[in-house]
Image (tube, rainbow, N blue to C red; front, side):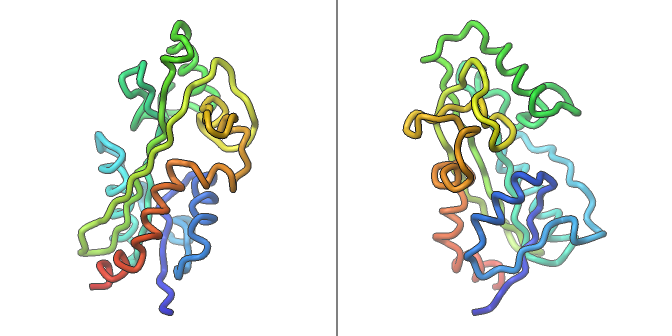
Length: 204
């Protein structure tokens, strides 16, 4: 089996660890952006998760000459017309931390009853290779936004995102539990199911 080099286009250590764990059984040799010196940070100017994922993946593929995987993901809250959406990581400002973003989300939903606090995590994964059209895979996970955080695992909005079937927030789940139901896990499942086709497309 041919092992291909794959560069994960992510500066987020939490996402990087999650993606590496989910791809551990695939015939790829995984690198991160920090293994290269010539990669400039991509400007996420897209208006959708797919556009941003493609921008990031293509940037790394063109910079390294290797296959690249990028994901763009975030939280869509129905009562907020889909916000924070593509601005999830900077919902409370460009330099906002997870707690800042969580606090703003709680303030925005202060008067919204539980049954109307429906939300989903959405993830789009893009695979890119130089001079080859990118391929994308999408995964979503439905849930509710609680009134206070629960759990200290995960990152981002995980402690506020309650998954009814699991009876826990993402912040209370172990990595293996989260990966089995998460938006990123579902997108990666689609990638894995079509992995050989993707590799053939990229190589051809």
